[in-house]
Length: 176
Image (cartoon, rainbow, N blue to C red; front, side):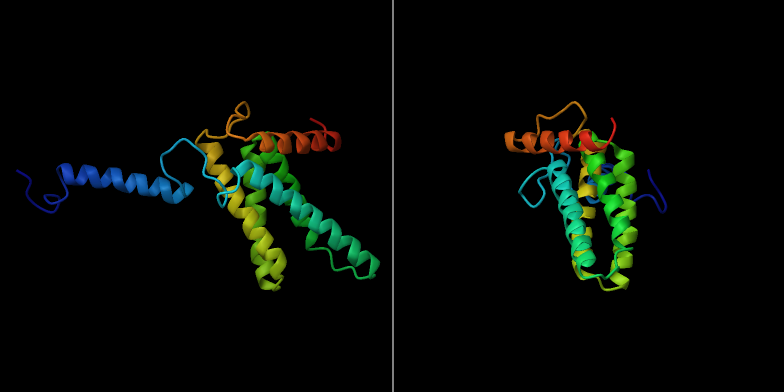
């Protein structure tokens, strides 16, 4: 007979609540259920394709802003250089399914989002928040083994073509 403080916390009710809390914790940490399938990014594509697209978009946006600032003879670009570097790291992390690069990129973008919030750079902040979201969900998928280096079965035909095109472009720029 259980007497004392733990009397109400023992038994089958306690065990089932422990399973529920563990499931809720896992769902909260990775924002997904126990299913092995990847959660689509805003119901459009998987996390790897979304991360690649958002990082390429950010790199293109930075290049356009730098060109426009150069033509206008204004040099207000020092805050764009870290964003460019973190986008390149996030892009390579997504293409090569490398957790270390993705972690560094996500941490850097988190610090950069605080900086963008302080200087009220709203467009950059919006782009960075979407990149952080996609990279965090990609990290969860990589940690759970949903997305691996050998497994491209989760990608649609169009997604595989996008990944191959960007990988070939990235391999021309960086050594493997």
